[in-house]
Length: 120
Image (tube, rainbow, N blue to C red; front, side):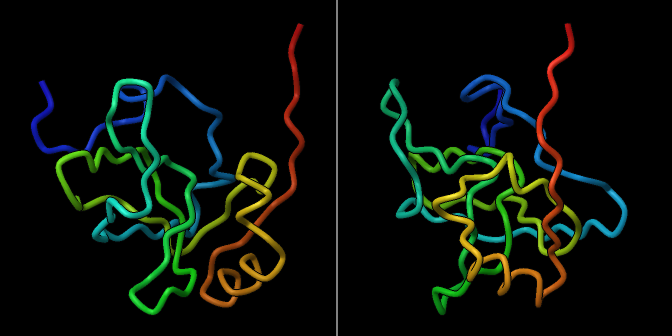
């Protein structure tokens, strides 16, 4: 039973593709995840999904939310990737525009291209 309000993506919405390109150079920090950045799921919970853009108090891109965070009962702490390498094809292209990628790259977060492959 999870009581902290911080749940893994498997507990909230099922599994999704891993967007980490590598663990080398990965830096994660705990940040306050706000309810205002959440979307409501089919069960009425408010979730900030892993892979979402995290913006600081100045509304500037700071990192990427590492895993789903349930903020139904209010803002919660969550893990945010600040430095490292991620796979851009597995993130929301409408959110991670060239401008956002440039801002995050300047802070040490790099975007790699690796199309998804299907095994038969």
